[in-house]
Length: 477
Ligand SMILES: Cc1cc2nc3c(=O)[nH]c(=O)nc-3n(C[C@H](O)[C@H](O)[C@H](O)COP(=O)(O)OP(=O)(O)OC[C@H]3O[C@@H](n4cnc5c(N)ncnc54)[C@H](O)[C@@H]3O)c2cc1C
Image 1 (tube, rainbow, N blue to C red):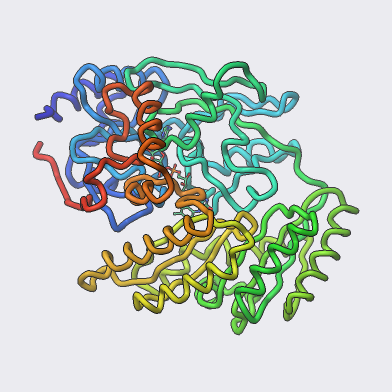
Image 2 (cartoon, rainbow, N blue to C red):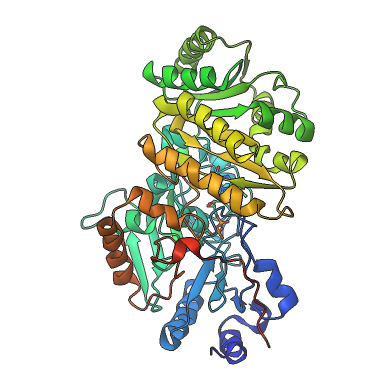
């Protein structure tokens, strides 16, 4: 059995005793990530401040064969940072420095615990920004974004995190420090940066990250259109893209979400009677945005939009986005718990799949609110339930599983941006053959031959689907 107390003492010599958490009441703060239905108190938490400290910690883990789980801000929605009963939790919250800003070559280097929107804040004065903008951007870490290959509202036009990471300093599971990529977009050899992005903490810990920054667009305009059916909003999304327009973002919210948001943050912009609203953000040069906005408005009206509101001034745009950004939190207003799924479908399947999700909700007896990155076909059905009701979580998970299978059936994917983590590993078989999964295991083993980096996550072991992970465990100190 791992000697957690002596390990805590060893880690204290590296990071200082203040940065090793080992009392049961403090450990509880780390018992889950954003997927709060799964809980596991970690036996030990350590908060390093620099790459060298991470390296020393992982050398000890490697030598003693102790598993570890990396954690950024703990906002992940698939249980990627869910602690394991026998693993050290390594938290990057103190690795919060912006190390370099290079406007000439348009990149910044940050420590992995830096919060997403600090990057834009650091360069916006000079007319630059960092494009990937998860709705959690004011709290999630860049390291977490890299590990999940996170998306966001503006990823339709600009791409997800992997398209914005130039280089990574990584501590491998044996404690060795390595650099992947660099400060230029293309380097010869295998794309190991691309391989690491989206690896969910299974290949090592990213400690320093080089990110591309973009010039702030000349003009931004947001359009808000309301529709009598979710299908017509979905059809509008397809028609906008078919017309050759790539908006910065296109987001749909259904009636349940609209009313939850209006009850919570009162934008007074989203018509409560609409079955769906579509938010479309256009950016670029003045003339380009103006031309596209006219086309988009015509497409909305042709699909039966009631009203199309536009906003150009920053405060007006923020007002239109406010409800979308608060949508997940607003679910707390209408339901004690929610379970968010994250699947991708081809855009053309939006009307069909949304109808099917509605029917599945009725079949299982749960309300499903829909808020999603419609332009990418990235759905986020929010299944509303009460965890106190016996069996509700299991039913909701089964409903979520049916939704994922539906996504795969129409040619989509079981994750758009939230990752697989602990939550969705059993659905990997829906998308990948045993040979595909074995290949992934080989890659994993090249980085982590002892299998100590976030073990059991992402790639299923045959027994995984039936396993429960929420058995509380508080270690005995
Ligand atoms: C309200 C809300 C809205 C959200 N909206 C979006 C959205 O629009 N788009 C989106 O993509 N996601 C969204 N998310 C999910 C979540 O915010 C992202 O997945 C985010 O990238 C997680 O970052 P984190 O720092 O919280 O990572 P954590 O939750 O701490 O960890 C996530 C995973 O990354 C690994 N990890 C963390 N740091 C490192 C590191 N330095 N090196 C290696 N592995 C590491 C962990 O082991 C884990 O597997 C949302 C979450 C919430 C709660």
